[in-house]
Image (tube, rainbow, N blue to C red; front, side):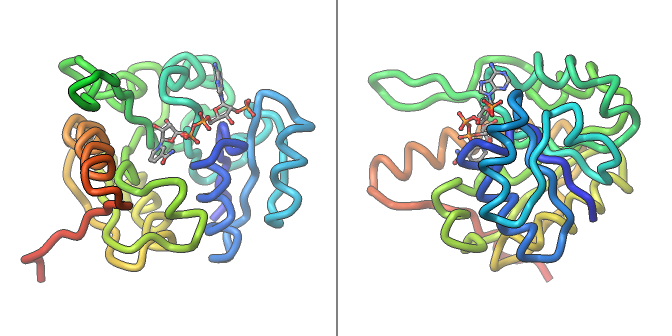
Length: 205
Ligand SMILES: NC(=O)c1ccc[n+]([C@@H]2O[C@H](COP(=O)([O-])OP(=O)(O)OC[C@H]3O[C@@H](n4cnc5c(N)ncnc54)[C@H](OP(=O)(O)O)[C@@H]3O)[C@@H](O)[C@H]2O)c1
């Protein structure tokens, strides 16, 4: 699969890109700066390019920019992405003294992104910490949701390469509201127990 990782110079995008290259995918690390992309991509055996060039010809785009710039970046790349499926991994978090909270909005970032792109949007991998992925496939399952079955199949194929457990279909794109919110739960667990929490779903055949 050819994967374009927008914002692939970041902790999450680069760790993901490294695992995908190891799994045999053709990966282009994207950045706002082509040279920054090339410097980040070269050691992991990926190509580096501007975000616009990274999404060109991809089978699946992963939008891995800083969460608060995900919608703006998605909209700016809409023409370049065209009808290609996009995987949204973003969760916007609000930090407070009492803990971390999910962004206050009725709809998920992924649903809002879907309004800005022509191609299908799927969401997932929110429970996988960049630091965990940097050490290899994450212990646990990866949840993916979306309304387009072909796009979801591609995202599940990608997800299966980056966890030791299963890549699971968590239903329609509206499930992204829960998946994005789960990131806040995980960050709170990590703070409270000083760990690296992941998710494992039980009771499924
Ligand atoms: N970190 C985690 O553990 C984790 C876990 C699950 C999901 N996620 C999600 O993964 C995404 C990336 O997380 P991260 O921790 O890797 O983020 P990050 O390091 O803060 O940022 C990733 C990349 O975003 C680009 N960027 C920064 N500001 C931007 C802007 N204003 N406009 C366009 N691009 C911008 C930068 O790339 P260039 O400067 O090279 O363009 C940067 O390398 C987020 O949406 C996050 O919610 C993160």
